[in-house]
Image (cartoon, rainbow, N blue to C red):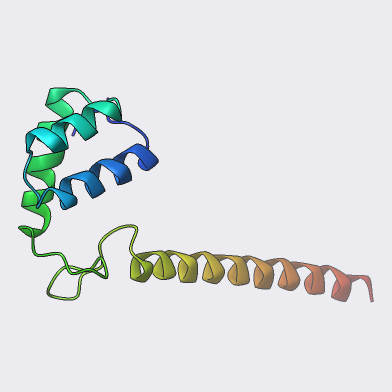
Length: 107
């Protein structure tokens, strides 16, 4: 997709509108997407992206069959949070080690 795609909130609303239309770019879906500020080219890209991504087989929990988490789903977000906490704890350990090493030199 090009660099002219709208922000995440608009993209989320656009994907919801496409899902409500059964994954097809119906006239009603086009009207909803146009109301969100999308142009025809962006609508086509979203429609083809959704069909390539999971073939319309997404489950209600946001995961596709096969166990891969869809970005933005609870499973994917919790994985990102786990990575963030791991980075924070690692940084704290590094800082604590440096402080202890400096304190040891003073004695």
